[in-house]
Image (cartoon, one colour):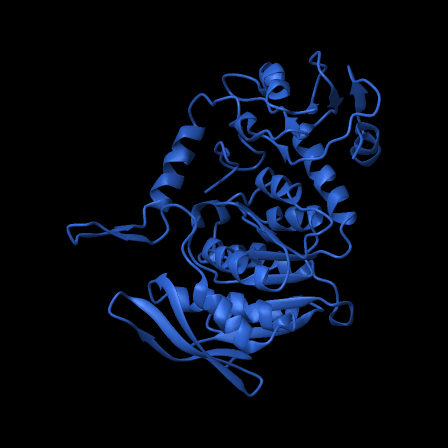
Length: 370
């Protein structure tokens, strides 16, 4: 997009730019992630200001900034940078009519389910997904700007710190497919009750188009609060489960000697065997959620089972298992401790690429919130 096209989509004005500046790479809010042809989002921090890194971003290859004031380099200047970032992402989604947006949320399991989907769907078409847990009002627009006209599936994890947050993210990137994993007690202090958590997570299915327009809700039948969300959507509903009756089931679940689950994937009278490379019984449910998405999109069960069986742990600190040459096995599942450390850091003076989004804890340098 040219800077003029960007301002037409999000408002603001172009400053200090020669003619025909075109953004051809992702729009990033971390100056260390700038790619040649990209755009840098200048966010105010608690100690320093992203605008101070304008020249550094240009030197790294950015062709312009999204900023709240002129900075002496090509920039689109807007009143509210985070809001404009979201509007830009929505404009990009609207330019991708052949891309299926898949939203994933839940109190637990959403990042693992997203990671599995990010490895399953490429078997059926080019796929872009969140890296790590870039699942908030900064990380989601960043992920959207990584998509291209060749992207078939855009997988977006959507986090929430309160009612209305998921709804906002679905406005940025309206999903055609929504997945809800579980409703738990995570962030109960912020939401006030489990019922409020369910209300917030269910916003992702309320955003779906009707069934006749291709909307698909993938719901966990083993969680009563998730299963109840079927009444909140006009979309087609596919349930998945291990313990309860469901449209897509994992049958005869077993664990091998390393704690990796295997099961028979069953759907619509067909079955296929799955043997996970992921560790932990809980991954069977996450893998089943991802498989249900792929099956709901019309892909054959044998190909889906094969793709799910190849998925590995890709997010650092989430059940990463390694064995040393002396035979000692190390299990690193410290991701949540890392997230809490970033949350504590957000209460301290921030770096230029750390900010506190409205309504919640601060985002880390990669846009992650707790």
